Image (tube, rainbow, N blue to C red; front, side):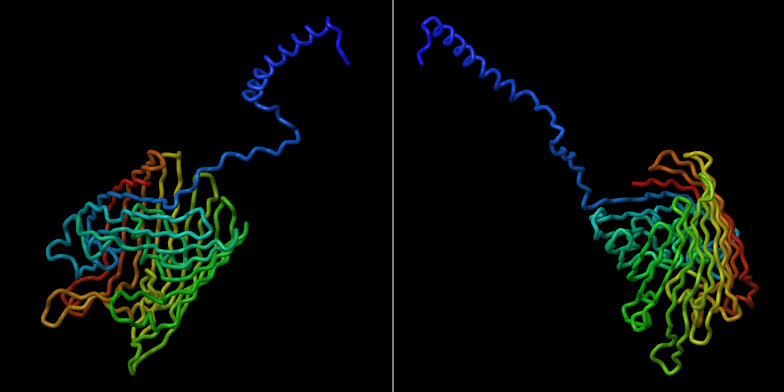
Length: 425
């Protein structure tokens, strides 16, 4: 079909205009966003930042400790981490009536989480305490506290293996002295080489553990390595933000004088009650109570360690509370006590060599120990807190015959205080 000659110039003009306008339309289409379609697939959100493979954390804790009476830290006559009034037989000559003080940073801690957000993760934690060094500076050495692997088998079940807090009695009280807490005065469980399995739902927690029965810091394998393992269990009711209340137990058969003609096998273990509850806003209560036999032989920080002839039975516990008036100001305190029931069988914690000389140490050597602490915390922010705390101890030490004959009295009291800064990373 041929178009009329009058139409052809008009069509040529239209075609030329369209050809000129099309590139501009194409450019506009590329620049403008496409309209959203109600049937289009949703856009994926931006990926969250990846969790760090290694997350460090730290507590830096410079403190000043002042004692108006001799004190001791886990049997050593110093105030690195005060656990009792000092054994009068071990106080420096002529110094028992003087006020002592020290500046300490050894309770500071450094730790690392590895792959913390993964199903399988690891943790290391160190502090720098050495109770045989009264006020060290550059002679302080790292002490391994935690080295463990955690494996989340499901949302409700975790398997842990390595060196970690004992499954037994898992609560600690409030205090600025984070190494001493209420150990040897009602607070018992410490670190153990073990494997733990813990299951929980919204209202119940159940756990079990198998571990090395004790501690051996010598070069020669001995009772802990040749003993049957320790077994532990705990069960707790969970109340959500209100806390938990539970029971726990640990046990093994301990071998005294192992491998000799006088070897004796005896039960070693304990049962206990514990809780960490928040009955009201800003008010928290923590407690433990226990009864045990030869519990100190298992590496627990209690009074009773059996020997080749006698078992040691004991009872104890602690009660601790904290009340925050505001986000920045809080009061806290604790009372703890441990008592050996057959205290006539307790042996001294030290012996004096024939002909004199420095005493050697073995065991705890106390019939009873009571501690009371009252403190105030000012929290500047999430990273920095200042804590001031007063303490009192009443301790009943067993003395060797010569010291008793010399008129020393093993029942002693001590009072003092600690002022510290907590910096948390």
